[in-house]
Length: 144
Image 1 (cartoon, helix red, strand yellow):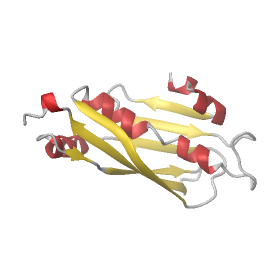
Image 2 (image 1 turned 90 degrees about the vertical axis):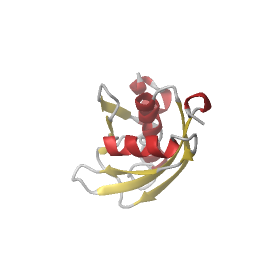
Image 3 (image 1 turned 90 degrees about the horizontal axis):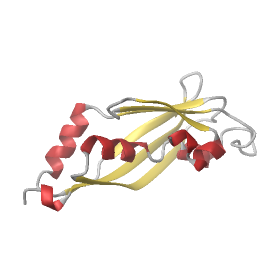
Image 4 (image 1 turned 180 degrees about the vertical axis):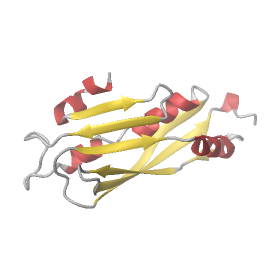
């Protein structure tokens, strides 16, 4: 369904794979006339759009209804010109989940920062994005 999301349709962003447990997501975007900038490389806004929601969506699915999960902040660093097909891979492992559970057990908010690289066809980094995610165990589940 994400591939039918209008901002993704309009930029050519494609979700290639979502693991059944939501712990892995792979996304790609081909360079097209409608998503390139003046110098014929990937438009920065499209690069950011291809990574924007995924850590939040993954954590909502993994943690379940007892947690509030929101995107809080983001920063993007353009490392090299994005040409051809660019890709990003998102991974959430057991250590990340344990860290979240430990830091929110008493109802405290936690704002981890996760990084994801957008790579080109040769594996070079085109952009690096840092996402700050707001996470809090909902009060009725906090044990406070």
